[in-house]
Amino acid sequence: METWNISMEELRDKGGYYTATEICNQPEIWQKVYDKVLSEKDNIEVFTNKILQNGNLHVILTGAGTSAFIGLSLLGTYKRSWHHFTSCVSTTDIVSHPFDYLFPEVPTLIISFARSGNSPESVAAVSIADQICRKCYHLIITCDKEGELANYVTKNEKFVFMLPPDANDQSLAMTVSYSGMLLAGILIARLGETEDMHNRIRLLCRYGEKIINDYSKTFSEIAGMDFSRVVFLGSGPQFGTATESHLKLQELTDGKIICKTDSYLGFRHGPKAVVDNKTIVIYLFSNQPYVLQYENDLVSAMKTGKKPLLEIGIMETRNALVVLDVEIILAEKNSLDEELLSVCNIIPAQMLGFFKSMKLGLQPDTPSKSGAISRVVKGVNVYPFITIEK
Image 1 (cartoon, rainbow, N blue to C red):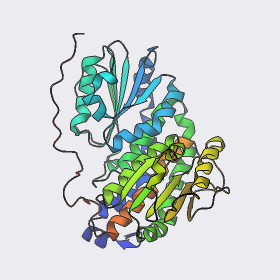
Image 2 (tube, one colour):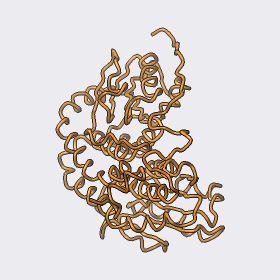
Image 3 (cartoon, rainbow, N blue to C red):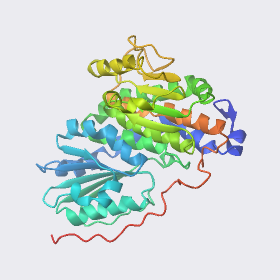
């Protein structure tokens, strides 16, 4: 058995078995996530419907590191679907500056995303929220039933959505756990539509399979090029994917490849200066015509100034208005919801990170030679929090 023409034996010898198989298993896991949300739909609705009756509810999407970036892709979906004020705040920010985000008189729903739920800030953030907010609810989306977050004890109402066991990836860099939790978040936000989304989930899985099977050689060849920087650009839900993409490539290469993320419009306001002849720019294109106008303008603007080594476009259908060095095209017509594209569009960065890690002689499953990063963050002190009387 082989993955990307690499035998299982070689993958194990080179420390890349888990990362490779977890990247490739994502479409299969997405279908399982959909089925599990569908099977738990009634229970989730009972929990959320009561909470959503709060007129001035504040919904906070939170997590640490990669898990925090899920909220960046989900922000618009929750605002449009639930019609409540929603913000995306990392647990690391909540823990250090809780009164910037939590208010005693405002009913608050904390939606926590966590692979293991064992990061020190994960439980600290929900605990602090319980102390500050008079009405505080918890929706926990996680991959580890034994994790501290899943087993967090609170006097407030709590619902834990547990992803299928094989979404709990074993490699250092989150791959299937990220995309699986992101998909679960989309489906829960749009719970009333879940039964009608069967065909769209199948299409999402096909897109993922196409990237994995049809473009592996492309990314392997790109990984062999002499580049030191990569910029990921995305708008709306794709901005969350671009942000996670930049971290994924940087993690898997142990910081040897420095990455940056931005929006298309934001990139012109100074960050474009980072581009040089050893920079790859990767565009995550929207499939919305209005948004594409701004994205295409930025691509045109890249013709002025320093030229990047390579420009790569990831798009649902061919974008005839831009000329790029590499195009990752998923279909002949636009058919998928923009937020669902953010799920499959993480795969290119995962693949590029895996192949570049191998080219650099690193072990993708444990790429950090110095131990600077680990599967679960270590060394974080959580200090006692004292709040006002309720």
